[in-house]
Image (cartoon, rainbow, N blue to C red; front, side, top):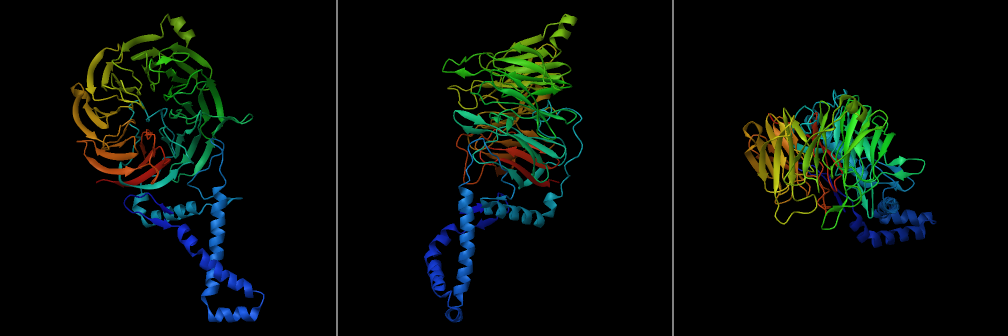
Length: 544
């Protein structure tokens, strides 16, 4: 058995001689038997040691090997039931079942690697300051997944957080010296999820929450949604449930302790990531479609708002399948409508009482789209950007087709529309009048916002694997992920590939193609989740 440290440029290998030990076992046992035969006869034992000095060495090695093997076997029997217990693989743990020596080896390798590479860790330290505005999905409404600092290249793994058989489809968010994330464990017909906070520099677990009700041990369902953090850093809000889950909640935790602050129940699930403005949180409860007809099972879906401070419902508005991650700007929320809806909608965020007093309707405009619009809404200047398409995360349409739409904020009037080869499901990232669009056919397409969305360049990420996650977009680079677990760094000027990293676990490629977590770049670090590789942090050097 060989465990590998995942630094692509400096591969270190720790051999653990399980097979070799098994091959030598008869010889070791024979020597041990010879010693035991005379252990109570000191003179013969002394003579034996003089004649065959290798015997005591073998005995000592055998004892050590038996101890280690026993510890490993005992550790292997400590299997927890799905969704019941959680531990961080980046930590060294010792308990009644012994020490996990693979973790010890990986920890030693990390420490040695960092000690030998001082320049790699000499990046801007994680800031202690909280955000001036809410930190929502992909950071803000530009969906760049970047909060400043160096754009690292020559990436090496700094730390990882993972749990057995657990996926990380949710996208992480970095706030100050904290990284927040969520996960999903599939145990059909159920799903289980956890929410956690890690130290941005070391990956050490600060808190982990897996129970929504500790008294009844009620567990969270899996998380597809990504966390958002309030402007004051006090609260974390995230949707709950995968696409086939019902009776899920919008979850609000104390961001400093992980304790549940409130839960808002819905009959459906919340796959989109919530938006925050002031004391208002807005999210969409998506429909559960069944069969070839894609008819909704139960309620067709609705958008709702709750008060951040106490979870009280402020309003709800029926929209078919609002799986999109909404964006709020100046009291108006923009959100996409998916299956059986195919639209982009603008709604006022004031409470029902306030709107009645003002004599205003909640709906401002509702603009049809050519296909379901399930991707996140991106805002830039006076435009609302969103992608749509006739394929989804799991199935490609017989005749795939997609579009990137630009609508005017005040009226919803279509300003321009760009056809693309397949659905745009991930968030569109915008910086300096360039829009980076992830396309399900495996391409990243860059559009010029100053020229009606004309194509600047296009780059295939990895073979023909779909790109389902949005890009992290810095001043110089785009960090993009393919469904099969490859992260590429692209030059923003021409789309050329700078480097490529494998983010799934080595020797355990994703079988479901669910590496759909979008990277997040903050303070010279890249955070990204995957299907089998957990949540990882990469560091590197800034390209001069």
